[in-house]
Image 1 (cartoon, rainbow, N blue to C red):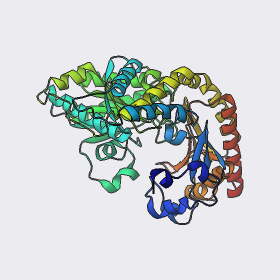
Image 2 (image 1 turned 120 degrees about the vertical axis):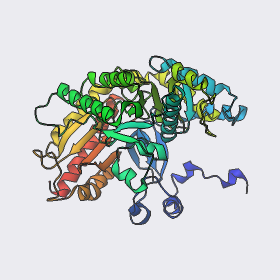
Image 3 (image 1 turned 180 degrees about the vertical axis):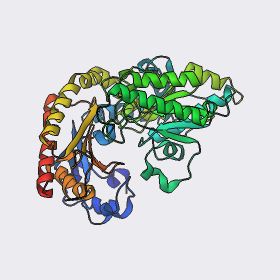
Image 4 (image 1 turned 30 degrees about the vertical axis):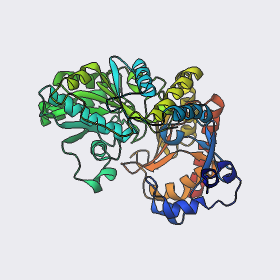
Length: 478
């Protein structure tokens, strides 16, 4: 059988009824963070094509992708052919080469482009294949840098509670999500967690400035308690995804973290796997919030997830120090780091983003998105306790007891409401977003759509959310 004969044509799959792909997947494919019910009783969607902000299943049904795949499809689903042309050309010219003591045009040019976009003096790029790998690289670079300057005792990392940084060993160690990490412990030693920036449930009447003072005071107390000379780096997302679109309480928050790092000789790492490449209306979230990290970790949006790619951006100070050290190199490597095809896709992605004004689109339409979604939150104030976020990343925290700011088990538990009513309602109206029970037991609904959304798309997104909330609450009797 030839390759052509053995290849499934997705255009044909879209009209074939049924394809059997769902059952094949249930039998053979181990899916990411997928509950057992999806392998057994639940319907398993099979998506076969995309267009603009929507994806279509094998039965031809359209779903508005309010999550941009997984916070990553910046360009939506319309530019695949153009990026594919760049991929095809690269495959024809040089399908693979390492960056182990050699280079090739896509890796060199992409590193240069990222350096031009990155804030301040961040102009050296190490490539990986995704966010978890990139955080692993950042961990190792921070440790090696501290050892090279004679600070080998600095092996600890500080991260924030409920934060998510990946599922590999080191990245999972940074996670502040107990449910994700606990069954795999013991993990990498020396990771400590401080409060995140969630203001919902902070003391009544506390001002943003007071919250900032509390957070910075706690962080410095933790640094002093652990011993400043034992801490290699602090890692934080500019906008924290897990926990629900958590933004800094004031501009002084990240400025204060930066000052603490400078005072105590600690590196500041910005995990921008989600906030990088436009999601907040700037190329990087650290630019958006006005602070200068020592490293930026990126992935997802660099290639609009059309190809797997990630990496770490650092300064000459860090890289040259490591290169001049006893090992004489950054002591880390990946087979697919700087893969020429992935880098070619990323270069074309960035070219399209600049040509189409995608980052400017986010900056322009973010207030309108906030307005429309806030109206949905207000209409459903009976269950929406908090609506928050920034740019094209917004979250609704749902509660039934507004005084306690909690979802009470009666008349229906949070899990049953999500599983039996809210998730089915979202599927019924044709909207993809993230629905989960947060670390405090409340349902959380997140939207983080493609960055190419128009005002009409925002109206549709708000309408679909409104309809889903209405259906779910009526059926749950709330």
